[in-house]
Length: 127
Image (tube, rainbow, N blue to C red; front, side, top):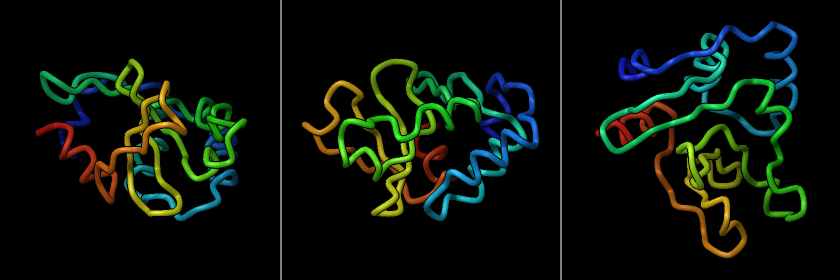
């Protein structure tokens, strides 16, 4: 995942903050993603000319999940970032995949499958 080296990364999360997000997880999260946020606490930038990503900081992962508290289906997703606009990226806890969700159409439109792992998610968006 060398492409991630081009992103602007945040300061490391505190051990307590990182532990708090790990305790909040109620599904087997991708280990590459967990390693990424532990080392970089989120990041932002372009993966290529078309795809900008904003990976949320650990404190935001805690505060913003579940993202859709008013909708029971919101518990099925663990959001970890966005395209910097209206498209959110989340782990689908039921289908064990990473999906894209239009923030404005949640509950109306189905999420779009992107990849089964964080590494493949990065590969797909960067190519």
